[in-house]
Length: 399
Image (tube, rainbow, N blue to C red; front, side, top):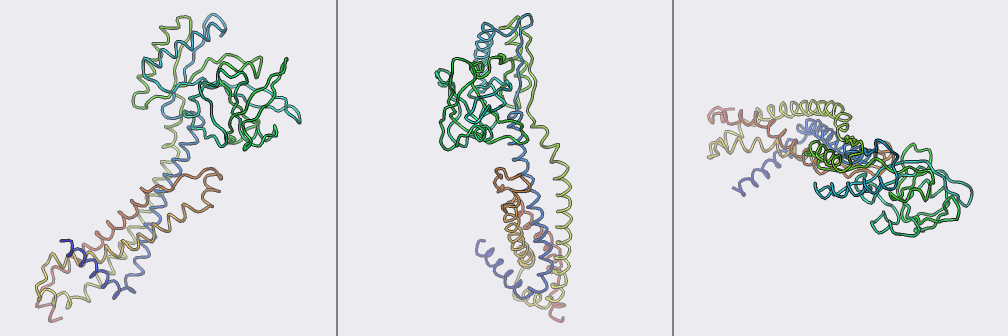
């Protein structure tokens, strides 16, 4: 069976070499269609991955729920903060939630060597970088042990470091804090700057915010990352459990990630491009089918001689169909290669992803392109193959 299959491929290649001028023009359409289809699938997956990373940095991974824990009759004092922390730890252990982080934001200023540096301060916990997919370019992110440091730890973005005059490659570095007596903090890591931000950004650990801004409020919102398939039910159980532990608090949970927006954003565009690619592929298949039918009419005598020497209908069918399959496979490989080169081009990163980290070209796009090219060849070759099997030996020899 293996040798027969290999012989059919070799035979199909020989026939393609003989009729290469006739087949070439029709294969151009197939190659273009496969290239377009691969581009649609590849670019769609890359855009989906890029949007997912961007959305996860803004709203958290799927599924992220924001817990609001506000005392109903008083302000959030030290005793309330301890109650909230204890309740969250107990709830996380009870329900097996591995990622919970505080999330607060306040504007602050830091005295720099060349003047006051304004910054947006985010109050978080060590799990925040995983939940928001933050990548540390230099240095490191927070660990649980940083909460005990005498000099509070800080993770800053590139904008803040540039305005303060710190080279990210020289981290860790010390910065002064406002207030009296003079205090310092240690910048332990740097992260990329967000788009369209007005000030630089710094991240500090929950509980240390007042060392950076005396008027900073205690965090009342926390984010938890849970499996999407059980997120809704789990959030209800977590809310009920927290209300039991915190009777004087108003507790609520809402999903805040943007996972559902990705399909809504890309779905219509991907569908339109996919339909266009399928139409192009259909036109290429019609061209290849017409050329194959014309070629079979001119090879009737050859087919008759092969039948007279004992070639079965199955062998004739398979041989003729393989000619189209081999041809479209070669055209598809060329189309997939061109599509991959386009997707990896620097212009794609510059204009489509704003120069940010470009997602890898998905292997699924190349696999889809090759499968479609093989399938198109099988479909386009089956009709002339059926015509070839119905040729009668006596009529073929007379022709």
